[in-house]
Image (cartoon, rainbow, N blue to C red; front, side):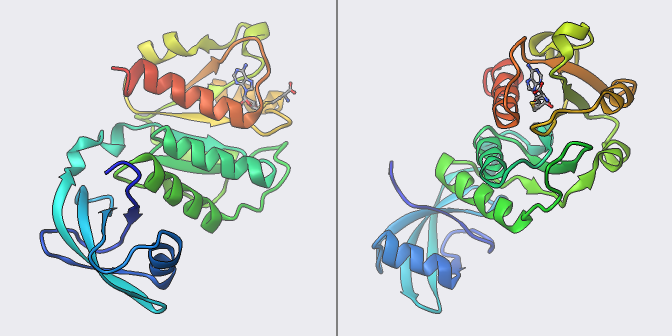
Length: 249
Ligand code: SAH
């Protein structure tokens, strides 16, 4: 069913379960994807795996599907608890959407917008980020959505960070200061659940890097001598982790 429509739904999924879809979803299915009664699609809810479903009815108020058969169990996807988190300083709008989309495609389990000294904007449209992540999950075949948290100040992020989850601090000064490790070595040393922290366009200020690097659950990591854009660093770190410790294992 390549090219089949995939839709995230809220309701429980089981054989012959009735599945309600919203007015927006009904519009997308009927008007955009030209589906009608009897047509098939794939649905997932982040809990019950992925199911083949059939359209019963669509109208401008909403729609109803019936789940028929499970196409993939929820266990077909790694436990979200083992998937990386991504804390990132919001950047200009399109960049932040890009980060949410690529982090979802690359399996991030949680997105944490963080406000640092050089963050250009502390207004983060979390509803937009959630919608972008949902669309990316539908498109890329994920069985779950990443959590998208409200923005937090850098200090609060460090306070709230679970101490059993390694925080890889992406330090753009890491090569010349010799303070950061390359990703492969850092991941080999800390194979458990992890997360990445990426700074804003203006980078971290020294005080931030020093304070963070002293925390026992933090490992400064470099992605090489070139200064990457924040959105590139997010994507490179997650892709590197999946290759070293995630999908690539
Ligand atoms: N102010 C910096 C650019 C910051 S880039 C300058 O112009 O020199 C934005 C963020 O991407 C950084 O804060 C860092 O978290 C990450 N980043 C960029 N290049 C990196 C690299 N080579 N290694 C690790 N992190 C990097």
